[in-house]
Length: 102
Image (cartoon, rainbow, N blue to C red):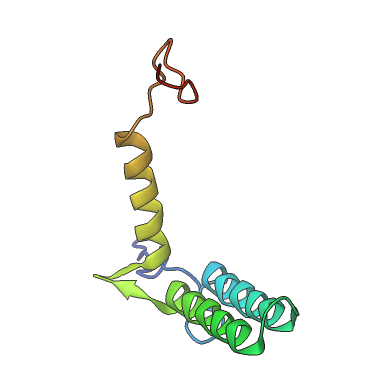
């Protein structure tokens, strides 16, 4: 008996506007965060509005953004893994950053 394997098994599900569940969560968190920034009364409305727009643009970039066929959040994750594996901070015994030079 012959059986054919479906070609779309490894594709991610699309929920709304072509977004996967995690990308939809990025967009929702960005919108809620922008609303929270706008609703707080800690700064003048021009500053709060500018910051809220920046949060929305960041959320849209992370949700729909792609560079060279890969999602932006995957690029950020790869950069963080690369930096954490290639750069180390070594503490030298006897060195005190707060000790004043004599």
